[in-house]
Length: 633
Image (cartoon, rainbow, N blue to C red; front, top):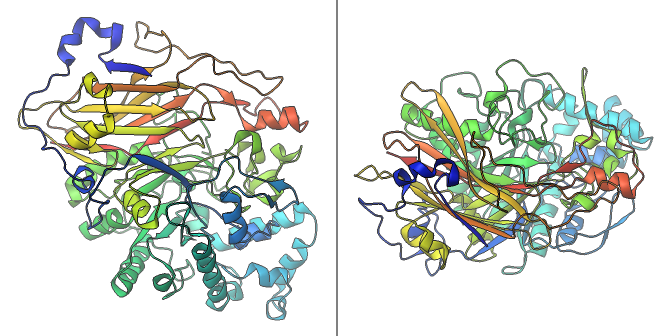
């Protein structure tokens, strides 16, 4: 274990007295239950007998061949195949390969698209009613042809859906009923409380204004009896997220159930994910902000189609901002316009949300950290040495790196741009639907690019290095709030202190460093951010400019191997904000980086004989993100 009490280390030792961890003033009363400790709201609490001591890993974004675009690409899997794979069983892939997950998930869900749910099997099977439509007949024929013909048909489907001109038969809800019932049945069949938890779920798939991705994954806390009462909402009925929240509220009122909606990563929304207006262009309202905050608690920071943490142009001082960038266009590659990026990324939304809270009374962008794969094969694979790709046409084979993943009129995203990402960790009192969903609702989650590293993040006002020598979680819950929580300012203006803890993936790479990213909005409404290195491996020291040297690189490009001879198995620390202003709202989250390791493209090069070009990255640094902690004066 490597400990670090963050006092700027040797860089600012002369000023260390300014940042001592002794804090006076009001202290929060000890929390006697997890419900009190986690600061829950909306009527959702954790079990009152204990605080969470275990992180459970799963995927919130999985498509099978039952999703129209996956099926159009040749996927033949169904929900039961996805669950068996998630449990660690050997199954047949869409290309006939035996595939097996290296480690089973703790929880899982299938989120097939509600749009066109149940139609793909009819198209593939040549349903006479559908074959009377020339477009559907042409698609059916393409699916029996070459991979290129199938991929072209899939791209056409996505474009037509984004332009709201799909054949009427595809939009007929009569095809959905059987598919939705079977989706629920599969979730119920594989749900094993305490051992392997499944959730009933679907994806609501908005491709507004020509491919601007505003998708949401809708997650049920409930079982089959409630979920069967109504069919999922489709974008054939509405593309307005506000109408989705109304649908969710209506469901809850009728059934007594609970729902969450997790927005898709916003890097392909062309500036619409965090636009500061309602979907129809009208001004935001207090009710709009409240509904968004109520139903959207987590945000997808990373997945197969890149990351939405931040962009190098938005965070020029962040040396780790340039990773897995999909920043050229939307879902059908319509190019971005100037200014789009600032409304697509999580970090910037966190600061703008605090500004909007002053205007609207509620923070509409108060998002915790989430990650999912968005696989369209049925198989949630994040292991770099066994990455199964996003689509059937990108399952392992030598040439997949230069096979088109998404195509548009002016650009293409290629197979090599896919990321083997990501996974969500949930701190819950037990591995059940109710406990996991409640933890997601209170945002006690962290996201990783696939690693099973474990992150802990607590905020309070009197944490010290002594807390690291005992049960730091007990100290965190007793005298502070965990990730996803809120800190109220103290009467004496004391700066908050934070406990950070990161444990490596037991089967993965050592850790490079732990950072805290801070965002705030000044009195003029301008957003700011700063990145602090809190704890790191080795004997490195910041240079005169405050920059921490790189951890090193042990990757062997000839063998696609690396050594855990650098880095640390565990990093912990205590951080007190040296730039704290007690009168300014602030948001903090924790970022952890592993040492460099081989990317899936290097494994393809070494083991499949692939020959990727110089533009293809072969090495990367896996990373994880905690949900934020918000400070209010």
